[in-house]
Length: 233
Image 1: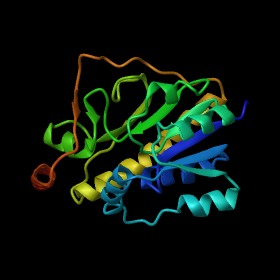
Image 2: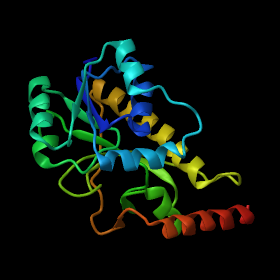
Image 3: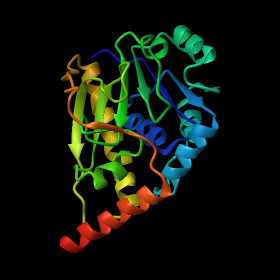
């Protein structure tokens, strides 16, 4: 079985990337390097997730020091520094643990593609904050691991898992569940890659919608929808 050579890219200390790394390390899937983006966009997205995470996650700093993984910092995941780092490392795969939209000159550098964890069920819910939009659009909550292409969350699907809504669930608990389920799906994808058995299916480009970052009112509406669902259980 060939050991996968991959780079983990994420916003600085984003919970999604932290959980992916933690899950992968428990199965000896050690990245060759980690590239973190430090930016105001990353901080905004990280803060949204950190309010949802109740169970403490190991940090990138802690895990990288424990496993002796090189960590690099960039201002933008698509900038020249990021490109040069990837060129030197020459990975089989790039794994995304929550980043800005990655451009072709970056994701095409990995020999066998770039994999993303999307906290929503593709092709139905693309774009930002899928749990919020899934609730409002009556689409199941879930996670998808897919290849990155030039579209937004339009690449071929590797695996998916629906997350049932429990009566006690909150918006925050559902987001936390997507972090853990997504990490497991990514770990499984990397194991399949090492076995030479990583399969995917193209997405239907006619189905679903791409959503933007929701405003506070929209988030409140999603929470209200979830409360209404709880009363129906």
